[in-house]
Structure formats: C-alpha cells, structure tokens
Image 1 (cartoon, one colour):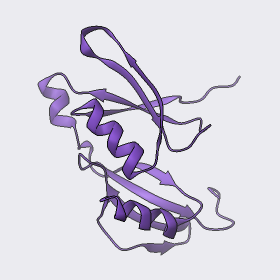
Image 2: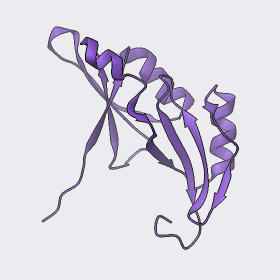
Image 3: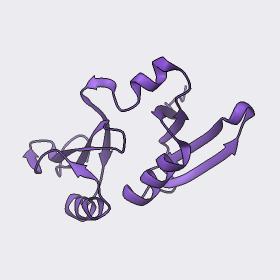
Length: 135
C-alpha cells in the first residue's frame, strides 16, 4: 500500500498576498491557482519544483476561520522548511523581509531558527545535520 499526505491547509486572509509571500519571500513555486465557485480558489504552493508536499492556501471565510489565521497551532512551530543550505536561505529570506524570531541554533539534528510567515504562524528553517535521520 502506498499512501502519503498530499496537502496541508493553511488559512490565509487573502489569496494574492499569500501567493506573493510564499513565492517571493520563501521562493516557493505556485503549483496551481484555479478559480472555484463563490470566489474561492484552489491554490497550491510548494517549496520546490517536483516536491511531493504542497500547501493549500485557503482563504478564511467564517469568523472562526479568521480567528485561526496566524495561529493555527497555538504558539507552537507549525511547519518545518528543510533546506540544504541554511545560511543561503536565511540571508535570502531576511532580505525579502521574513522575520526570524531567534538566531540560528546548532542542535544534534541540525541548524535551525524559527521564523514567522506573513500572518504570524511559526516555522522552523532547518538544515539537517549530516548523518541525522532527516538528512
């Protein structure tokens, strides 16, 4: 049996501002932007061309959904962006206005620092250590 998680939903305030942040600030690829009924859109972004992982950018439409934008998992890190070059990506992201909440840390599992997306969700930028299970 072959199974995988295909998409993770990320609530956003506005499709276009979210697409701009992910494609410009994080250098994600826009995979799909298809109009749907009632002004909704099917918007998928991915960290790299050919990556099996995609984020589904879903515009918040109810008061409850709006209350979750930027706080999808409480005050925890929500997503983990893995890189093969931490320094390169952190420099590029900072130049694009991405806010890092800490200086890089060197842990047994790799180099990591927490940053925020445009709505305040916390992410880890991580470069796995050589020989770690994630590497």
